[in-house]
Length: 471
Image (cartoon, rainbow, N blue to C red):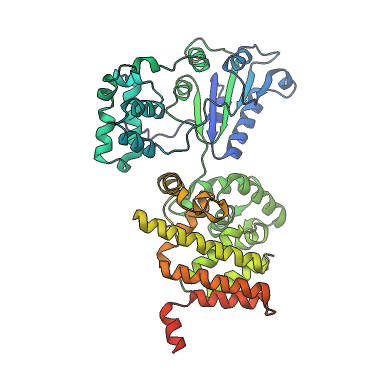
């Protein structure tokens, strides 16, 4: 099994600043803010303002062909050392299927006997090889399957590993495998260009918002002759000082002659969700707000960065789950003080418990272990949310607003963390009480805040406490 490299990749920007420029780059990932920031700095270093109009081109048409791209990439610069061509969201990089690799493998495994042709074809697409390469045990296939096994690790059962190991034997028994070679058309032209004599004064930069298939032959070819970087959300470290985002934020504040305390940073990360674009906007707001003040504290962040409404509601439901009436009421008042209307707040509380009940039933049916707060968001999305959405999503309401598996994965991530606080019966009771409060809000003349406070107190009360009170 191949070992992943432990050394961090060299910085693209530092290489360019040291005049080490490659003919082709691929910038991709979920953090579009980082992609665009890196792209801008690359262009600023490669091209001067007075010659930029002659030497910078953008191609953003979904129907752009490889030949059109290469005809632009082969042009010579005008009064400049470099010509730069930026191609955004080229379709041949995008991950075509939403199905996770482990689900694809299991589906192919199920039809190994009944439809071996489709089984091999399915795995060939996943591994980005052709069936003939599988049958010949070609090194492209062996490298791809080793990478896949390494990527999936313990998610693969012994039977599934055995299935992957015998794929060449299955493919060799098929009469038509040799006809399914797909090295034709535009992709073959691009691969030939990447493997040939590349332009010496032209830089081709592909940007893709979202993930790409790392087993894609074009991605591999770019890695050989250029640079490939994936810009993904910066995950929280085990402590503030070991959080990669803390260093980025600290460095940015240092540019303004300011420092941020660890507690203030933790609050900033929580309220922005770690999204780089939101973090950057928040830093600008805070700097303008504090003036000459050299140190950024929690109150500065609290004053300038509004907490995400969902996270505020999560704090409320989390406090309810802990039966912490004082904290729950405090969270309720904070949500209302932020300007949220009582009916909207109630609707969100009911929605949270509806989703929690769905998640609880799914977790019990699938025998899922508890999702702890220390589980990385990406691991939850890839290993739990996406497989569940594919396998179970259709069993829930079709309306997206009533289906937890049709929400942003972050919503489900937060809710799954609360499941150990409630039983199914308690969640059902919570929904019943929410319905009663809804009727009161819409028909009663009582104060809306009082109705919500009463609801929160009832939800924080355990069944045994309710029974003892009624005696």
